[in-house]
Image (cartoon, rainbow, N blue to C red; front, side):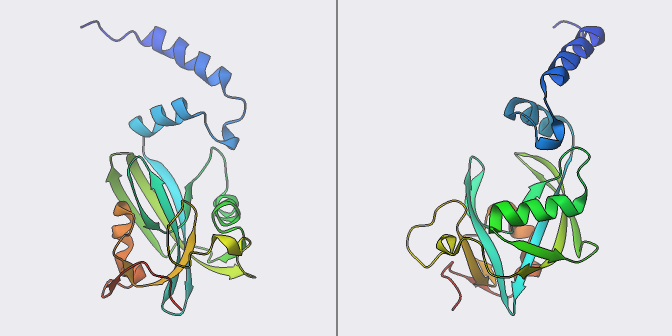
Length: 178
């Protein structure tokens, strides 16, 4: 085993940094994969409620599949408000009004990485921007949205830590709430 060459590592990292056009726009996948392996990541999750129902999105990735609270990782020098707005735009096709402070802060460890999650209560401003993405039964596709009451039986595994916010007393099949 060779010893760690700090000078060479620093030079290599500087080379990689020089190749990133604008870290505020996100990182290239290989760089993001490296960062998530060596440091905690902070993300915002949007808790959008309508009575007893929560707006959830269907996710399929290498770490599992299931209904999850829409969210996203904060970019370099990105204000929280901007990330909340961007998550609402990209995942909900809509705009939201978020409370000024998170209603919950959670830390979790997952094969994908170490995360600090800030959960914000949000209200939709108008309807969903892409009504065709609303799940109405049948096959689920990544990005589909559904108003679900309680904790769905097929919740995205790591989002079980939000069970109390979803209504921990009820676990239901993921049929859309009517």
